[in-house]
Image 1 (tube, rainbow, N blue to C red):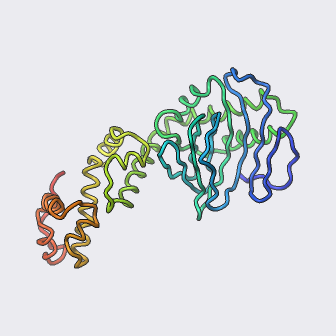
Image 2: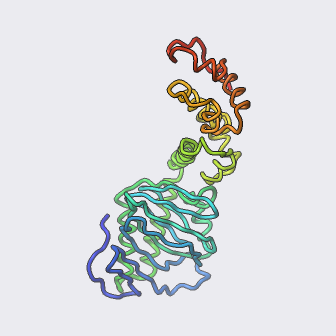
Image 3: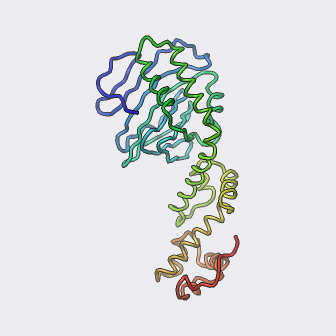
Length: 302
């Protein structure tokens, strides 16, 4: 879907920044605040590299549909790495910050809304419990609804009810795809945890740090790891560190104490115990073995 360009007439308070590829239309809705659902504004932007917004709080709900690129979204001390085919939610009163990737800045379409039924609608769309984002399945009909929402807000012939019709179609689309998205969301959580471990195993991280980064509680993280890997997050982290340490023992002459510290172990003695339980050898014995292919052992069960 292409971002709007060129001069646009001011209808319903249309905003256009000539320095950025952005359009935003503010809608003067005739609905009262006690209405079940009403539209406030909508827009789309092909962001510049590292373009950011916030930290800021909103007084209404806001959904961003990412169609290209990637970036980061931060809310409630959690940061989420998001990319094309993700939609993320901003709720009233939450401090949020989001920034486009420097190399592959995202393009997104957004709309703001409110109403007494907003929470129930978002629950049905799978956007209320857990992390404030989910995957959506890109489809021509979804982009048609989003485009009509933006185009319709610039057309005085479109009534509030017609705009609401497209809004409900978008929510209906998300609701229909919710069950298919559950497995993808779980995969996102697990992949985010594994990437975090890959990037930070040498630091003094804990299971709590991992769950905080992913944005889910420790119990849910534990269940994901056990179901998909048959290891707890703690067991996986420890084994990842030990495998990294075995590679360094086999390929370098670094002191064992440096390898232990560099792989996230607090002291050499605890590293030695974990390593022997895992391999059947002390770090020094392992280093003196002539080649990994000649090992006559396998890692012990965790």
